[in-house]
Image 1: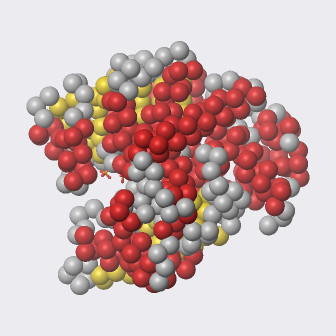
Image 2: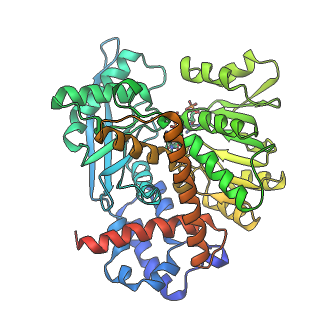
Length: 458
Ligand code: NDP
């Protein structure tokens, strides 16, 4: 394991518990490097709680929590518009049902493999616990690449994917949502096929649905909005606000777009965003209406933004972290913010970093921020607004109700404040004040571990 900041270094006794566990996880999950990274990042911070709660060690909670309850891998055959046949691989990892039905998104991206799905599912357990809602942890997806595919091809792929997956889902069993490459269109095709096969209009089986057929207001905005709300809380605890701050956002998908929207509403200026081709800088502040038109309506590239707006410049083949900013919001994908980027951001005076994406910051970069005293929020806390609003969608589905935008957004804001405060106070209680990584990991872990103890050896 790598060195941890002083305040988080486990005592030798806890190290003796954690080191062999981590070695065993490496041995049993070979080649799953993102999963190793996510597990290590959590285990490194659990020393103090294991010291105070030896019953977690006796009940082998860590070994059990690191082993998914169920892992599904399946074939997804489909034909393209020319009649050529393709075979993709589908995944669903049902990690933990201690707090509720498995809950977590589906990712369609060529990079998807079992290790990535397991890292995301593992993070999801603690994230979902932190929301305070009754949801367990899971994640899924496929190595299917939706880029450049027609609507009809996307539909055939989604139908084939759901033809296998439906038998493992249910509103009390497992409830997927979107993630990279899976938005409202895909959720529609997936829901349609589930309904057709099961002959049930079971609204609560998927979240992120269209507003006319069981979807919830604010779900689309929730992850980005929540990330910015969390950032505002971090700044507030340091006597500052977002008003007038200069912000860098990476990505230009669902999370990035709504992080930009909320940051602008709170008086900040977002000067950059990106996609996998490069980034745009717009010193006047991103024109969100134009960005939405290009990315949401046209499914286009950020390069087009610079073509259509004289104030903006496009920089190909690079990330956004060279652009000086007060606040950085990585909202694209895992391991996109490296140590050198963190050093640049610190040199440029960054005050706060909040992960809109899952694990976008490498462990070395996290250390740079923590050592420089930058407020750093891990994804499992900062991006939990998406899944929390999914749980609000499930509540509305169960009660056949639909809430207003203002009411749902206020619920989201309350939840983000609750997550912030529970991370903050837990970090203090366990001797690492201001360390949101320690706070989030321990607060989430305790909730799940207590439920596992109560439910017996299963
Ligand atoms: P989208 O598919 O809507 O957008 C993803 C964005 O990230 C796009 O701009 C994409 O660019 C960029 N991106 C994706 N992969 C890469 C890569 N390998 N290299 C560079 N850029 C990349 O996804 P979301 O916005 O929904 O998700 C973004 C992140 O947020 C993910 O980590 C996801 O797990 C996390 N998240 C999402 C939630 C949600 O509610 N949607 C909830 C919680 C976390 P391009 O188009 O060029 O690929």
